[in-house]
Length: 305
Image (cartoon, rainbow, N blue to C red; front, side, top):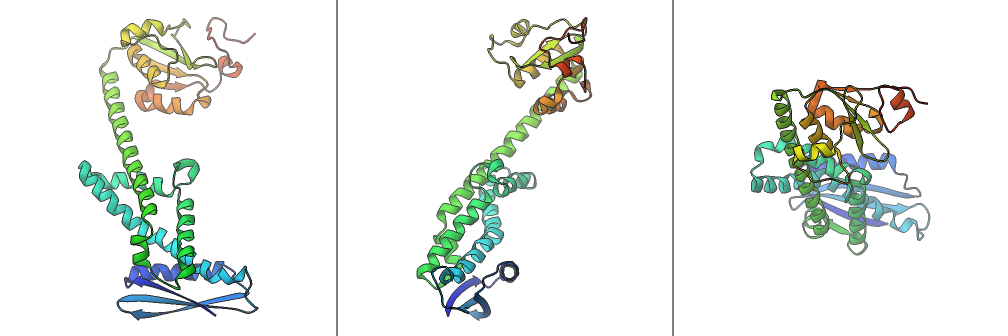
């Protein structure tokens, strides 16, 4: 028989969450031929969860660690569900106070949550699955030499690397919020500028291209040369003009209508232009230019050869 003891702070919500985790694991995890049971009791202001396990057969190299793995996994899950949100809020509160952003907590929280909970392919570093695996390994290693674990002490003194990683995610979430906020303020400024600006072009066609980011044409199909815009924009000749440069060009041209061709190939570009120019943007769903993926727009000869 093997015995493991888990001491939690006697907080009803914390203990209730741990019970729910144990119940779910008991239903989902098949530990046969090892049987694992637990009982609860009060001990010195803590809630003690005492686990006992026994094997219906003789323990072998595989089954000897099943009870330890069960307890370690339950602790990793509990820390992710209970302690991480608490500590994230503490970290965020300190950072927001320093940046004088306390009143924007409700807006910032979704950014932090997305950073902390999304998968590695989206979030980048320290995804939730990796953090949980690291917590499991630390708890599993601790229980190798200790059969009793005070979770509060374990969280405070054994998981500093974990909390350092989480702090970086909280910072990244706040930084992303501030970047989006600055972008939205910039977009609002551009919208206002466009609304009071005199119309200079009736129509501007935006044509993403293979060899260059885009081409611009007027309503007659004549090419609008970006070199001519450099002086007006106060910019030097650019080898590669990105979407920011396109927005600057469109603002300078002040078109009444913008027609974006091959929009499905550039969804990010479409969203950027629409966020600034709104109803002035029209999408060309299908035309000879879109279908043929031609590099030069010629309204006088619109059909591909």
